[in-house]
Image (cartoon, rainbow, N blue to C red; front, side, top):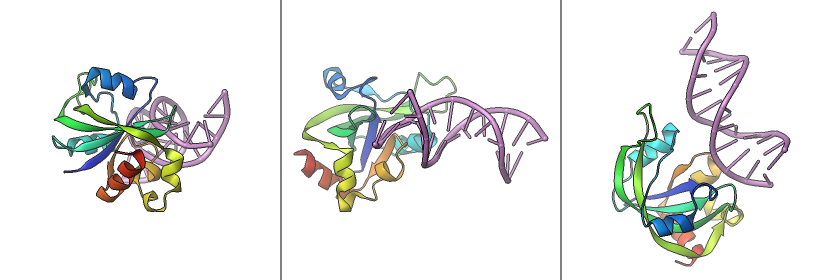
Length: 135
DNA sequence: GCCAACGTTGGC
DNA sequence: GCCAACGTTGGC
């Protein structure tokens, strides 16, 4: 099982909306590296839901419920998507500042490649972040 | 709102 | 295949 982090701007799609939807197709990725990460996802993999821009914090955990398949919003046919479902909300959102301040999280893809919207998370980092989030 | 980082496009 | 121009992301 692998771990991931996926970003969404709360203005366009927030965690609260996701929770009421119960499941969503992660459309709109137009970056090859992010696409490749989605392609590597397996059903049952877990991912953090991160609010980018407004918020800048991890707010919850979700589960991959459908593996990589075509994204109908991409007319070129180059990009696909996965479907995810919310699993649990963080009791305490973990802010970007807190992640940056943690010595063992300094190598996270989130920090090294700030523009990557779908990034892998190591098991060690996953555990630390879940602890910080109270789940 | 600004700007750095960086990915993509297109001319050559 | 290189690289300048351009567009986008996302932190501040």
